[in-house]
Structures are given as C-alpha cells and as structure tokens.
Amino acid sequence: MKDVIRKEHILNHSIDNVWNAITKQEQISNWFIEADFKAEPGYKYTFTAPKEQNCSQITGEVKKANPYTLIYTWIVAETNIETTVKWELEKTEEGTKLLLEHSGISKYLGENAVTMFTSFNGGWDNCISGLSKYLKQDVHAR
Image (cartoon, rainbow, N blue to C red; front, side, top):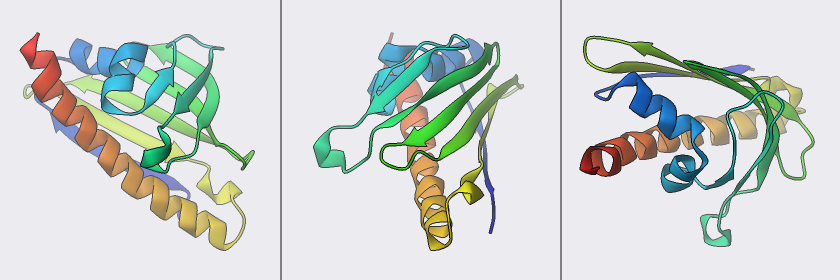
C-alpha cells in the first residue's frame, strides 16, 4: 500500500501569487471549497464543501506556514484518521514549482486505505487543476 501521494507542477505564476492562493482563506474558497483557514501554526481550520459536491468536511491544524512551505493535518469528517498535507513552492525560471505531498494514508485500515488513497489522488489532481485555472483566470485578471 502506497502511503504518500506526490504531485509536482510548474505554474506560470509568481511564487507569491501561488503562495497567496494556497494560504489565503478567500482565495482557497475560490478554487477549492469554502475555507475557514489561516496560514498560522496552531490554527484549527475547516474546509466545507456544498452538499452537491458530495465531499465530506475536512478539519485539521496548521503545523507550519512559512514562505514557502505549508503543512497541515487533514481529517476527513467521520473518520478521525489524521493524515498530513504538505505544500512546498520553489521559484523557477518558468514561474513556480509546486510540490504537494499527502502522507499517512496507510493509517486507514484495510481496503479503506486503498479507497482513500484513490480518492485523495484524484481529488488532488482536481484541486491542482482548479488552482491552475484560478491563477490563470482570476489572479491574472486583477
């Protein structure tokens, strides 16, 4: 069973624009789901999707938030299983390299771990796609 999902993408946007998009509550709410979030260690956050998105509420605590690394715990409602999400940004000639890791998925038991890994893996692909689209349309439009 794989325990870590890794995603790496190059975004044609400044590191500060990408950092703001993944750390500012109002921006996260635009490209992901409704967020009560502050990029401050110790902050207990909540992500809440509308019912029609068929997503569970996600809660956790910010562990690290310094440019340009963001780490927080990730608990899907009704599971009480704590996993960890880590975003790292690096300035490149093209813009920003985004590295995302979601670890600890093997804490889910048996087949549930495989189900959650598959769900999270596809979910992160959708999130990064939404982030990229948000940065192209909304941030460049400002």
